[in-house]
Length: 261
Length: 128
Image (cartoon, rainbow over all chains, first blue to last red; front, side):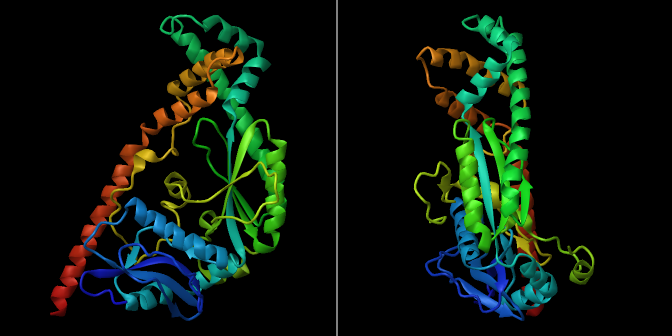
């Protein structure tokens, strides 16, 4: 590891000192070795990277993700943002771990033993749209009246129909988000409801789970999947690094005396 | 690769996190950023393949929902599968809005990278 002569040091994550790296992980960039640089209570997972090539290829991002999330299955990690580079090994010690030592150590303690899961759901659109239309006589009628008609002639009717359906989807989505949160909260350290971005998206929830509760949590996800079997296809992603639950960089001392509990 | 073993019969899909769209949704622009970080330029991620970040409510969406009811009626009479309609609408929406903003990010990243490079050059110059 050097960082001299056109190379720098790519940083993946901060972990506790003396952390063993899992084997078989490919670093971002070519040929460089993945290592941990320790300082105080902390270790930085890094590899050398040449500055002569732009970063951000599909493979770079996937390798970054693989390193961080494989580590996250073994130990508590603070994931760094993709593309984070410091100038050399000394900078890792002085400027990264040294400067931020208390914050990192505090954040690692906050997240100790926790991992993140993401629960995403997609509606069975067939079922959903069918149900919405069937439940509202006005919509059934409207749908019936424009079927087979000239699309241009019924443009505004179609907009009206779609808008009404979209509104109902929004309402159902809101109810489902609340329901999912309630179902998973008992097994979670924290829950973050995220925006649903697909038209047929049902729920998108990040959950921080302590490792002792993982199996209970997974059972709760299964139960939710069973309950929603006819309407929503659920997907469980994780465990991954706690991306959605990173503590804000504040003065650790004020936090320990203040916001706790 | 991803998750724990399942008892048989779970309806929930345990997804390995290998899909680029998922990875981008989960981690891009997240994680800690520290003052000493230089963001090396982000170039070349195939952003067109992201099916995330789609604007949900729009006239296009309404029209697709309306179209879906049309297909739904046909489907009930043994016609087309709505699943095809849904995958079609996701695809269509993918090529919309998000590109411009992303490009801005890439350019911002590149600027910083260039700054970083010239800074290093100056440093090396001073050291001599």
